[in-house]
Image (tube, rainbow, N blue to C red):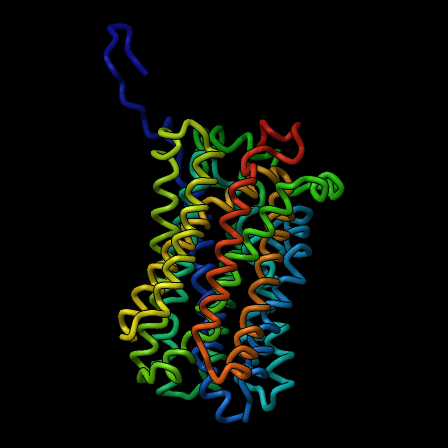
Length: 437
């Protein structure tokens, strides 16, 4: 604003948007940390559980996969419910659900009980990120969505990275059976606080000034509603299938980090307990940095390319290609520490994909971002469910040749990169939603 004399007049406090929307981002970041602490706890406790309950490697692979099967199966229903009734009600239910079954993992007495509990745990977590995505779609202006996703996935990955250290400390004091109920309580506290603070429609939330309401007014079109999901249009477009295929590839590689990696360090590299806890968190720690760097690079790279679509394709392909190459390099390194540094770098590159893939579901999905992100995450967890099973069988039938598991991960990463060469990550499925998206 300028005066009649042409001098700049600084905006008053009332003219600047308040920052209520950032509280939503903070809630979602805390939830992402909790989800990753909960899900990596099983991978780190696996050697103790196998010893106490007499579980073989293929059986452990199915236990890991049970989470991913349920996660995949309930992704679309979770996202669909978010589009219809809103993330406030959905997140309350699913967070309380998975927190209970996180605690219940500590009560397992057999292979079957672990398998069923892991499945039910995954069914709850399936509703998390589609509804976080839905909340961001309604609560953030377009120019803040990519950065918010970069920060969200940074902290999600770091929750998984530091979770093993926390779990190792807890297990050393109370044992694995008591560790799971302790972690389960985190979600209960979050769910109660979130439900009483959050509103699905930002226009209904007290505390926003006029400037912030004006900033978010267009997002009211993206709040939950009763509009029918355009399934036929979504399934007929290559965008949907390519988004799902690339995330299948991403999650296949990622699930190695949160399932078999601690076992690889302990049994193949003979790394002590707390050292393995620190090293196994490296891919997620570096992945978190990759998410943040990817989000920060979007804007300057777009200025160079002149196109958000080209930027997303280039960055995502670079991420997949880098992860593929570094996973192959890791098989040639003798030192466990250097190996984990290389695998950590692979985690960094693979997570350059995240701040491109999730905002793409917002732009392509529009009002139906929850459902589309649910479909993408479902496909990812189908890939994730296959990873621990494949590794279990490869180890059994190859005399524990871990290199074969790495070769397969590299090939799947490469497939994900190829998908991005043909993906349009910006055009809405429904053209009439272009302005709203």
